[in-house]
Image (cartoon, rainbow, N blue to C red; front, side, top):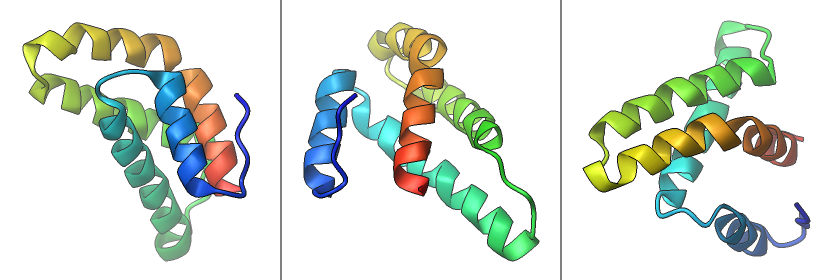
Length: 98
């Protein structure tokens, strides 16, 4: 994945094109929520954070979204979660947290 940190909008568009799924915004929103919650745990609770904790939180939250999703998206969302969450999450966290 080639992304530059100079322009956040181009990064966003690049991620959207690379994922090419109709539930792209759900992924972005949940990913940001999980990073935010990990940040809060570090700052307010003094907990040591790790990207794997964030990944587990993301998987849990996304699984809840799948339950509420339209029937036509459920299979694609489940397959995406299993196949791509590891690769995408490592990239996303390393890009936006560093």
